Image (cartoon, rainbow, N blue to C red):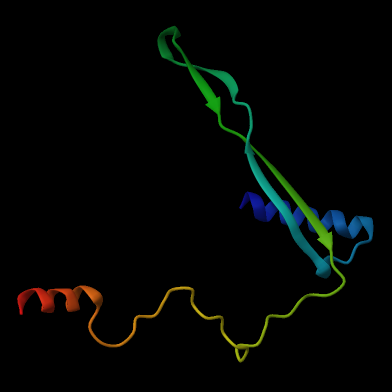
Length: 102
């Protein structure tokens, strides 16, 4: 929900700056750990417990693109797999076992 709120905020900022909202694309996003906020929680009988808030810094850069790139067709030729296909017939270890037993 935090990232969605940031995107809504970026959309309203783009409207104010006069940018085309429909052509905005997230170019860069990064989340970093922020320093802890240390506070005190006061408890019964005069005790005090620490209260630490774990925060994050979210950095997001949006850019305005001229056109949206469409996805390639599925009819395009597929890349060959890098794994070597085995030849039909018995493998080397099976041939070795046959020669040892006969």
